[in-house]
Length: 638
Image (cartoon, rainbow, N blue to C red; front, side, top):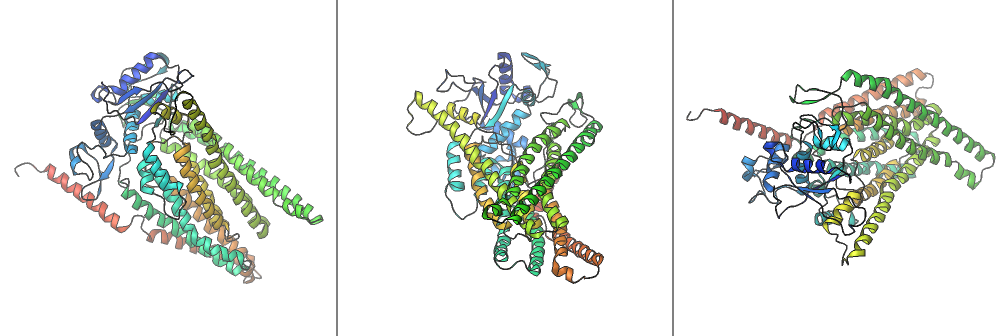
């Protein structure tokens, strides 16, 4: 197929530098072949040599794009939702294209670059082997009819990466409105969604919403902290407010999330049939759903791996975490004994050292465990990406929750030492935030600065660049070297743990909410900076909500009810009402806690997840599509 002069590169495919010529020729022809011949019908050309071409550069970088017509048919394939002329969001169809708002001429600026890149990725991902038995030039890399070519090349290490290209001008505009000017205003969520897709925009939307939702807690927390909040009556009031707050904010977030998803056209989008994961392997068999040959792996075998290997491993890690916690308490006891013997300024500082060391150890353990959890979940061999993610999230959450909160629960309910609980919570919170900011913002920024300088120096050796606008070949090579963005998993995990610190124990340390608000404000800027400057652009991810994390936050809010009521039951004021009977105190506390849980679930039921006006719009759309279907079915000339 001839390359059009208006070829706009949208994505980059990088193969290893010593890829066999016949494999490259075969892959390029499959990408260019017409769809009816089983190709992707995309435009592809090799990236020219960079300015420093005599240096050891990988020649196997390919730019991929598509004709306007191909993008239109691809949008229909992926079920892209766009705004209709009547203002509603509908699935795009080529037959109906002129009825969509903003569709003019041949639809030149109708799709955002992120949408075009998502279409390209979908078309490349669904490129399937026909009658090839192996990748040309690689007899050991087996293929069979229906196997995804790109996934096989990635899992066998022939393809290094596939990533979308940054759009310089749009990125500059987004950077300026997002993080370059410090201002008190909302994030440009629509612009983030336009550039990075819904998955990213939902994370930043949630981060902003959670930070604003924390403000009432922070505003109440400051006077509590400053004025005699040792008085446990006030402490009880704060705990009850805390419980109602965490229920209401999660329910209101669902409504906010539904409004965003409707505005972005992902709320009523049907979930596409999930293809097997790239790493999934098994014995070749026949899939009764797709009618294709694909690997099959017995579910019983997977369950055995989960229950006989993964579960014991997680329990062993929890035991180790408990062991480390006991060492921390021994250190704490030693520091206290030293301070009590001869109190000086330095022994006062020594009291905080065990907590700081423990906080650092927790972060290291979480990091090591994360790698182990990824390895185990990969080994369990889940067929679908969603199933893989759910198992990984569950493993990581259980360990992180236990590792971060076990010591606090022990201090609160076994030692019953509120002063130590407050000190430990403050130290854990502050240390983990400082470490996170360093690992997430400063370290990647410093590494990227070094990389960029190296590339610009290399270019300047051979050309005199007035400003630092790199030529396309250099831009692509620079982006290929950038860190790969690994998704929102770690960002949500951090917010989940911060939500835990605030909802579980902030009645003991009311400044927790203030610290989390300050952390989240810097988090917005550091995450925005990383997305724009440090990472390769990720492919957009059409999401309708924050997924499995909504459940995780709701589970945390239920644990918060139990924890706060146990803390209330331990307060001297409440104990004074039950001087003789410990059992009565426990019964009353449990009854009150069940009562509040009931109120929590009633509130969750009463606050609809989708706002009324959006429910009406969705119902109207469904009615219209049914009416249109009826008209189609009526015989002509009735």
